Image (cartoon, rainbow, N blue to C red; front, side, top):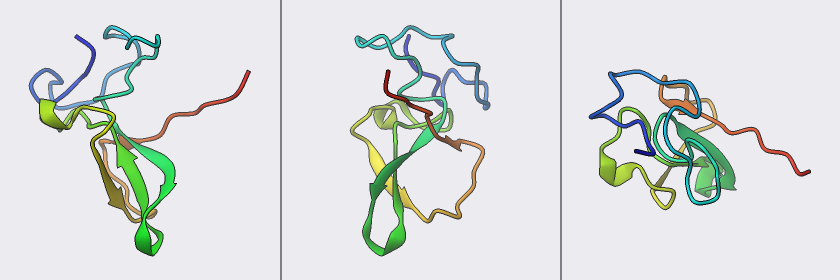
Length: 85
C-alpha cells in the first residue's frame, strides 16, 4: 500500500504520491528508487536508503542501507529534494 517494489512495480519507477503516505504524510520514502543520503561512509562512499522498484519487500524500509561511490548511476537510484520552511 505504501511502496513500489519488485512484486508490484512492473519493472519501472512511478510518479510520486500514487501510493499511501507514511504516518508523517510523506510519500515514497521507501520503494520506487533508492535514495542517496548526505551521510558519508568510509572511503568517500555515500549511504543509500529505502529500497527501490527492484527490491524485495524486506529492503523497502528506511533502516535498510548500503553504500555506493558518488559516480554510481542506476535506473533505481535517486534523491529527495528537501527544504526548511
